Image (cartoon, rainbow, N blue to C red; front, side, top):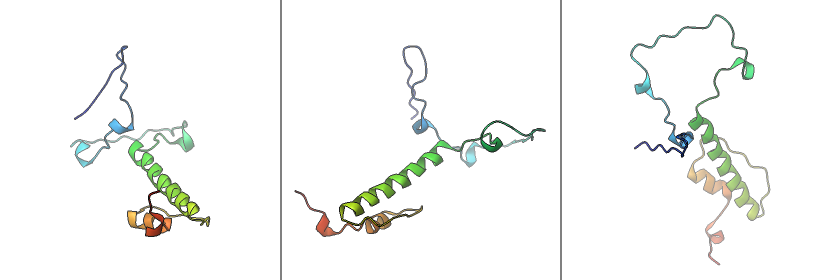
Length: 108
């Protein structure tokens, strides 16, 4: 169900990445014509007209958050060695990389 909310002025206030749905193969029209511009686009970074899909770009934050959580767990255990791991990052890898064992999981 799509939820949209407006403020007292009638402005949309639910415009954010959580409400954005990525286009999929069913979003492409049957008749899809493309025309290239005659001149180079000079604005933007290196002439780019796009910034990327919000959902894809925001997903990078999940990887960084997991990496920081693993670094913090290792630091709490006295291990301050450099740590890096790229995507994909599984739960098993995060658990093993954090070097947290059953002895560390206690309630005080």
